[in-house]
Length: 139
Image 1: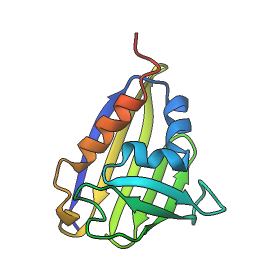
Image 2: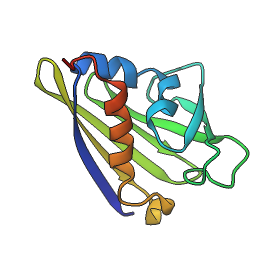
Image 3: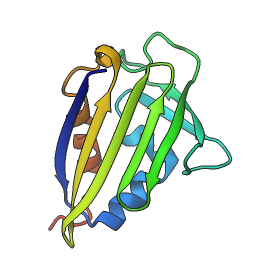
Image 4: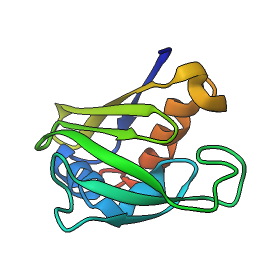
C-alpha cells in the first residue's frame, strides 16, 4: 500500500494536543471526510470499534450512506494513536513529540491502496485542521 506522511508543528503543549486527539468525538473535527463518530463502550482504547459517518462532500467513505467502521489499533498515551478504517482500508498513524514545552510536533502517516482518491496531500490537510484546533500555545 502506498504511504504518505506529513509533519506539522502545533502551537500547544503535547498534553493539550493529546487530550484533544484522545477524545473520540473530536476525530470528525480534524480528520477530513468524517462528519461524525460513535465510539463503542470501550471509547478510546486499543481494539475499540467506532462507527464513523462520511461527510456530505465527496472523499473518504464517498458513496456510502451507511456508517463505516474504525478500528483503534494502537495507543501509546501522549505519543501515538493508530487506527484502521476497514471499508476503505485506510491505516493512519499519528505520532506526537514535544520539541518545546509549549509546542508539539505531529507526524501523520497514512497507508491506503491507491490512497482511495485521498491524494498525497491528505495527511497535510488533516494536520492543518489539527493545527487550527490546537492553538493554546499561540501568543
